[in-house]
Image: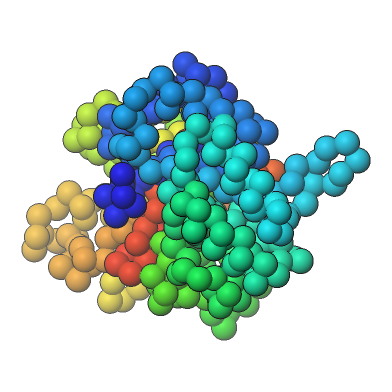
Length: 365
């Protein structure tokens, strides 16, 4: 399947641990219209790719129906070797060949460079990537967890345009919004999202993929944050909005959640893939008022008191709340949409074409 024909939603495969689980996950994902699957060579120390590869081997023709992307560049700790990021030519090539072997496929549709390597040499990365592309082992190349400056430095050496940047974005980690609205504001010092990255991606047509998109399920049926009124209000809003979406979408999305055992366990950092909430981006006059305001507005007809205007309606996006009364704004510092420690992933990811829209959902890596 071509990237252009693939779904915007991406199934994050970090949590796959057995062939039956992987088979159920893939079947449910396809039923829900999900045709992109995200891997990394470190997920389960290669185990996630191996079980997914077995699913491909058992299902002739499946590979042609889906898009497979994987990530390389993280060295896990082992026998006296400290875990570190490595985007050297040898590490990139070995990582890709290992992924291809475990997946049982001859090509990665998309290769993402997992984490910024402080010793990265752009020319070396470019040579490694160009070699893999010339051999037909890799299609598009993108990045993960990189800032605008890092993307720009890398792009100068690469022979082809970067196709994606995967970053943590969710209702809980909303720094990707805060970094823009808090410019020249004291609270900006609390934002940990790389400022200017969204603008850079939009300008250069780089797709945004969000990991940790469902925030560990905290707003969609996962463990509630006791005593956090903002989180509880957001969870209630998500439930109300998702109710209608579930009815319209059928059972496919629920089955995706069922196919990911442990997705809702506390601290498991696996997101439960239920429909994301749609919230209003501020139209003329500012941001969001409160959860009830948006829900009521969406259920009123045009021209009714409290209904969204045409201008506001065109601004509807899947976005976290941005006002100080935001239900997503928790007691933690403002910050920003599938994984663990610095390496995390969720069963559902979603990307957004930056040339057309704002970021939506995905997973942690």
